[in-house]
Image (tube, rainbow, N blue to C red; front, side):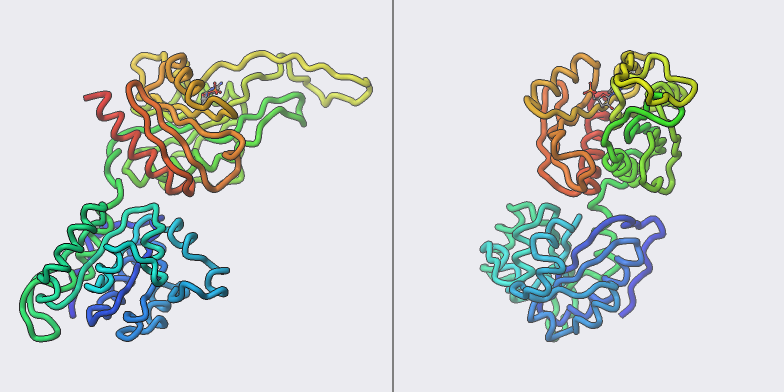
Length: 404
Ligand code: C5P
């Protein structure tokens, strides 16, 4: 079998693909597919049904994916390492290739009778099937009806192709070639939606000096802002990340502007014009009126610090002319919707994401609700990386709609 090499532009960098194999002679082609997915930068976890293991060994798939292969639903050892729910949450895309007639039937009926059907049922990401079966099985009325159910549930169908089959028949039911499946996987992501746009993102905390050795700050880890920067880069934007102090490595292919205080951050934002401005930073609301020039000695029993309000960076950028498309975040402990909508208006924003302040700081997962003039959208709890891609997709959509 020969497959044409994927285009050099095909990238699945940072993408997590769960590759499912069900039973069928075409399972041998999944080895090449796995190799191409890994080559395009994807992290790949493989789940195999019992039938698939009759055609190709888990060892082959393990060697190609670089990860242990998952085969059992009720295996305490495997569940302890990465359980079915975790696997489902981990994935950015699930591709079942080959998807047999039996697998399609089980999925269409909502079965959770083995690991692969269970992971598909518990998924939070797009699911694609690459069917492969004898042409008579593909055309059978039951398979056609199952296909209708699966498509109505939003499941994507990659193929099948028509041609000569392993059984000697000719017709529809051939698995698409590995290179075609790779292209279809890459096309599921927002790559390119922000091509040519300058995106400035503020992230992390700010530090407000008390004296040369002490400061006021907050618990922001910067994770959400850095994840958004990654997602905007993936979407083709020219990204400037203006970041307060964090422990995170700077994403590749972005301009990192490190800052310390809110005033530094404001100056950096004003020095970097943008088409889209996303303020994720947890900017200190107040700074010390007059930081001490030398270290404050602990001689007095009490110490009072006089604080003054910091400028609102986001509101300042939103009021500038010409102004970029402005996106804010609102971390609240109560009345999320009311406060977020009020900030959308008072800061003059195009879009705001509201999250629960008690569960956001430092966590790897988050859930948010987006509000814009005349609309809202809920994003359920998911990894910050996955969430960031979805928020960037909405930002790209809304900024196009606003400027149309
Ligand atoms: O008013 P509040 O601090 O809740 O607003 C949060 C939003 O405003 C965030 O997007 C944050 O990055 C931004 N902000 C800012 N400058 C400030 C305070 C908040 O850019 N001084």
